[in-house]
Length: 235
Length: 235
Image (cartoon, rainbow over all chains, first blue to last red; front, side, top):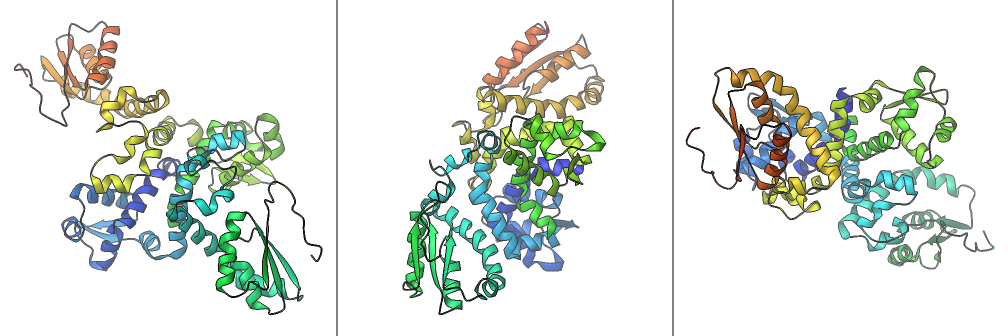
């Protein structure tokens, strides 16, 4: 029963938590440490109405992000993770900036088998076509999420992929070029071809140039969701 | 840590759960009872792609709405509440239809001290002005939520409010007139004046007429958030 209500109010808890972080409330409570802080003291610290602060504090207590003891607010363990843990922040920002609005159309998307909610950002067939044209904040949260998870795996994958000393790697869906650049840096002998959509390749090849790797990293423009592009014979 | 992630992915879990209910997946799994049901059997029952069903089933298992045992899906206790409990349904529909999109603007609303997200439905100062003009589905979920909680309290409140045999009751924010009608039905001697916005009064007085109570229930049109209306001398 309690778990069902948690799901039912999930979007409200999510937005209240995001606001509590973005408006600095969680930070102020956290700074007060073990002694906690009163509503009045929080109001003094922030340029926000008493009502706005009170609404968020009450939701914070009921979701156990905050504790309330003798009229003093303290941050909980969950609150600490929300405020300080990079994984949690990356997830929160990705869900808010990239997914939240589009998810309102999930049912229609599953029925029609296309990303109906994508219209929030533009009239594309898939988000990948629009990736380089997304609003700055959306793009930022997308790449931070993407890179947080992929970057962590690079150190484990690079030795595996390069242990047979390949001469050429085809990086399908090369995104911003991070993987291709890592491969080229890991081994002086390898060449990489990044395969991606034109918009993505522009960003990727700009990065490749910044690392001075344009001699060993080249690109093929193609949409692998549509058709199988011509794969170079050497591969 | 785990609780922080649950908050971070709350909107996605919410929409997936809502879709699982609305697309009939939870119902099909529930009907299979203790023996459970396989993916293939669910696909046969529903007019949905395997991919759509699989995505939702996987999310259902990871959020413990479903259990997976030997390739058979079973509904959990949380799943039962989501499917059958009226309180949970009322909350889910209210959060989805009324709150979800507007909540995206919570931070701006708290900073500007006005309902910024209300623009999703119309250009009103408060939602109360627009209540009678909301889209049908939104209105339905609003009133079901509103009435679910208030109706439960009627049986407890009526004896208390009417124990002193009042001759006249002022029903501030009378909404659809349910409370006024209940009071007039509870005691033959009481008259009620409903005070609300014009759009609301139209609905309320229509209901009053349907109950044949228009001689004892009248109305005053006013916005109590703006100014204090002229209260009848008798009160």
